Amino acid sequence: MNPPARSRVTAALASRHRPKLLAVLVALSTLLLVHCVTSPRAAPGRLGVAGQFVPIDAPVVLWSDPGGYDAHKPGKWFVDEPPDGKLRYTPLRGNLPAAIAQNVGADGLSLEQLQQVVHQFVLHFDVCGTSRQCFKVLQDVRSQLSVHFLLDVDGTIYQTLDLRHKAHHATTANDVSVGVEIAHPGTFPQPLSADMRRWYERDAQGWRMKFPAWMQETGVRTPGFIPRPDRPEMVEGQIHGKQYWQFDYTPQQYRSLAALCAALSRTFPRIRLEAPRDATGAVRSDQLSDAELRAFDGILGHHHVQKNKTDPGPAMQWNRLLHDALALR
Ligand SMILES: [Zn+2]
Image (cartoon, rainbow, N blue to C red; front, side, top):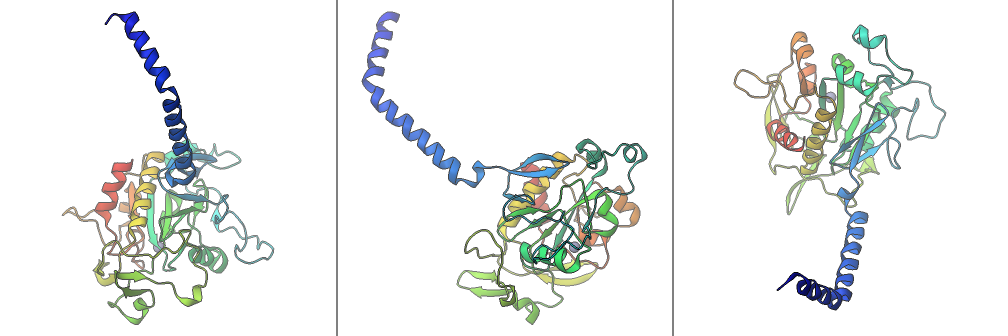
């Protein structure tokens, strides 16, 4: 077949199939539109850092979004009363290198300056069970505490503060760290004690978390969400040489936490996707010395910072988290 003949055939075919082609194109674009409107991945999450947005592959509700929690507010959040004037955070990070301290802008540190200063990400459990309850305790009850992120049982991340602000979550690590409170009842010194059973019950599918009646409103954004531990059985292990029992975090929390670790590591290159390890290569379950803490670049548990803390507890699957974060980085 010579070229002119081929193009005549092609033209004839195209004209014969044009209505079909059109219909397919319309169907495809409709599908695409519906996908964009309904898929959560179609609207990628973003974090607020020094007045800029950085992308993250997880659902994030910023302090300025509808339904968000704003720790910049100098007052209570859940009650309608005038601001008490008390900031829950510190506007500028302390103990800055002189070269940075002399060049801080009116709005605080720039992203480039933060990248030199921030080198740790601290994981906490909130002992509140839900992010809504955690924010209520931090903002309205304690009023001296704050944290940059809350991670709810359904994997929703709430960012309450721009990362240029120092949150009050981990004492000596506050100046150089970002923190997250993971919604979780915490560790228990006895297995299935009355305290633990207030938060967990068994149904046909195994153990699930339940919310106490006093909580009334959970604030969990996924309708009807039932939090189930990633591993079905209770986990036990030692923190600071003492035995604790704990149910695991939810798979949705692991997924979002890995994305958050990856996004923070991309944004702050000093935050390595690593945790403190002992000589055998296991993630340490004790407190770091002051010198070790200062020198560490990466992801910490609150127990690595303070001897009186057990979070995130023996259930945290550190190696799985770091591996998943590395894949998302
Ligand atoms: Zn903590």
